[in-house]
Amino acid sequence: MRVVTHVTDGSELFVEFPSLVAGHHARFIVHFKRTSDYRAVTEGQVSVLLGQADTYAASATVEAPARPGVFLPTLTAPVPGTYDLILTLQTADDGIAHELGPVEVHASHEVAKAAAGGVADADEGIRFLKEQQWQTDFRVDPVGSRQLQASVRAPATLRADSAREAQVVAPVDGWITAAGDLQAPGLQVRQGDTLLRIVPRLGEATDHATLEAEAARARAAFRFAQNELARIRGLFEQGVIAERRLQAARADYESARAAHDAASRRLEQYGKVSGEQTGGVVVPSPINGEVARVYVGAGSYVSAGTPLMYVVDRRELWLEAQVSEADTLTLDAPTGAWFEAGAGPVAVTPETGARLVSYGARIDPRTRTAPVIFAFPSPDPRLRIGQYVEARIYTGEEREALAIPRSAVIDDTGSDVVFVQRDGEHFERRLVTLGIRDGDWVEVIDGLTSGERIVTRGAYLVHLAASVPAEVGHGHAH
Image (cartoon, rainbow, N blue to C red; front, side, top):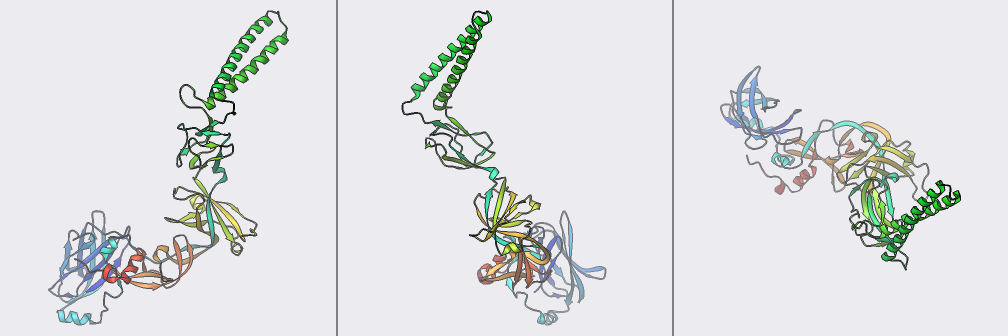
């Protein structure tokens, strides 16, 4: 059985077919997948053509796949000779031709068998079937060169900008009201929004009835002072009394009004207004952001200065890295950074909206490190304040290098290994020597050449296929 793998910009072809014998049928097992998403082609017409000069001596066409990605045309071989083999895929949107080069049509099976005697076994290598590839997150890409930036490793912590975080503390002694103002973690708030209310602690001899009585006395005194001021003003305008009597009445009015306002506020903070519990000292949010933590619950007693909530605006975070003293010698002016998060590397560069906040000019005498701080926009809700990350700070050095995605590399008992595609279903385990890493990409110093095709997604599945071939790789069910 002969196997051929051929790749164009639009599709990857993997075809298996027997030796061609004049006058005999030959079934071609044709696998087509799109190179855009590495998924099986599920519709279209496939033709197998044998040509000489400008004419086709034989052809076979199927109008649809036997199953996703697999087409099974059967060709009757023409008279013996050398022909150009071409496979075409025609879909509603496009037409693709794969020119596979010359093939031989033999006069008899004996001649074909003799000619195939020196051909290497097609099953040589690690076998991972097309059907298995299409059912998983699997991809093969060519090795090539790209610009890589050198970096130094530095432990780092994610912090909030000091202007975008706030510890909210109690302004007075008292009890957290059970009204509906107490905000829960995760809620978005704006500056000035009510976070909670505190019912202030009263003196030992003071209760709600006493406050009401004080408010009533203050209200009565205020009304008396208001009426008295109006009476004195009338007498002054008639010239009956001196101006000093009017000034004294005004002073009494202002004093009574202040006492009335203070008594009303005390009563409102402690008790009920218009039948709804709205009393208490309002504690507002000092910034726009998210309630990240709540340290108290309804009914709790707090003293002035007790932390109540932590509010933070996470639209921009700080990456604070600690660069070792030795690495500061190569880090003249940090140009950016990247760090590992759960979903992969996060770029902290001017291209992503990041900026350098500071680069410490002094080495910490205890840790022997210098801080580097970058501010960067953070739309990813999985990033947390205080989260520890392994960061790499760009040194500014760039170079063109042979590079592969980091996802292509498997750690095989301490050795860096990739899987090179021999044909559509066979792969070779290859040891590689790696250099600098730049985000998702890593430099290859030795072990690969430009243009070789390697597994860039799903490499661990090929590793399993090599380890447990009996369970992972079975034959086709065509």
